Image (cartoon, rainbow, N blue to C red):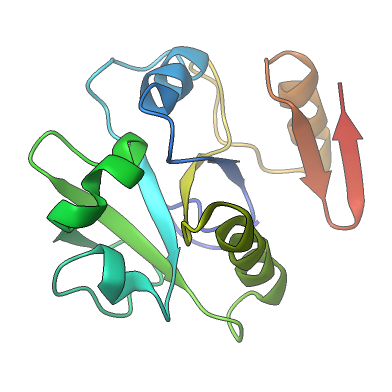
Length: 153
């Protein structure tokens, strides 16, 4: 679990930003208001191709407009005002997280994933492997990855 108030890859729910209904689905799973946005994590080397005036943002502290020509490709992370609170990732920060997004890009052409905190239905954020497993088995998630272990339903 990383330090701080944001899910930065080590206590995250990751999903595709390509499907327009993903934001609503995640808010339903987490029992949040429908209007609440989810954030993107993007490869640092590609972020300026997808977000206007975007730079390094490893802690989700900055909001950038989604480029108009990319808006339809990542609708799940685009807020109603056209912006997104972006996290960037590079190979040195978190090699496995970076590689995962690179593989997603290789498959889809999109170097962006949805990244939201790993918790559901009013529960606190997951803080231990036990919390993660309990949350996984009581939720509709497809898979849980903890270090080199993968659980699937």
